[in-house]
Image: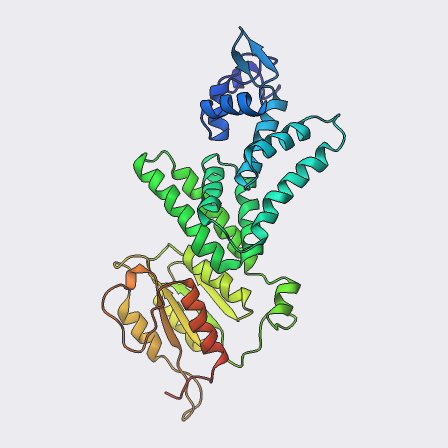
Length: 348
């Protein structure tokens, strides 16, 4: 079959096997402007090994790796000058301690986040920039560190949601140009939330959980589901992760759950609460919410029914009597923890 890096399959901007990548091609790959690359070269000496025709730059694979490392470090919050030093040292295999210097620079960047979240705007910018570059490893690293250091609530409300909004605005102002960025960021946020939904041994013990990482509350689980026709379930995943972080038992059903299946699950599980997510008014099924709130189980004289929480902007407007509508993730977690730790539901 031959070498896949032959002349016919060469990346635009590469003139020959030894010529390297042009500044324009590298800028597109990294998601930065050519002016930024020239500025980094001038200020920090992070420049190409090859310069043809006087001022024309050609970037070798080693140069590209160095710039990718610099982008990753700056996205993690490392100052550009320090990131440049670490990137140059890590790119030079004969420099003693190169790996250590790079690791220490990255560690210092991350240790800054060990304190209470300072300026969320910087966290958002770093995450959004990595997403625009389609730098999946950096996006994943930042999200993992964010949740581990600050928890699901702070990570979701102060960084993840604003970053998603920023990318969404960029997409809206540029047609469909950045739709792949929003998809990549959403997928990695979902992945980070899924990881947070599996309590580690330390997290489980801190929450007073048993071997499975779930607190013994004496109440049924919290059931989470999107209403029929609703596919937007990322906020529900954040709530699921927050409940898992607290060690509360949950059953996550995800997007577009059919009414019959949802009602059958309620009767079968006897949940302490049911969270119904609706992103738009067109999907907010109020008769279904009322039906679930009236669903009961147990022996006659001691029957129970679930509390119903309405989540999402789709429920805006008229309130449903007896149902909770917390304004955000933090309030929803507080309400659900109170239900799980409080007395069992009163007989219906």
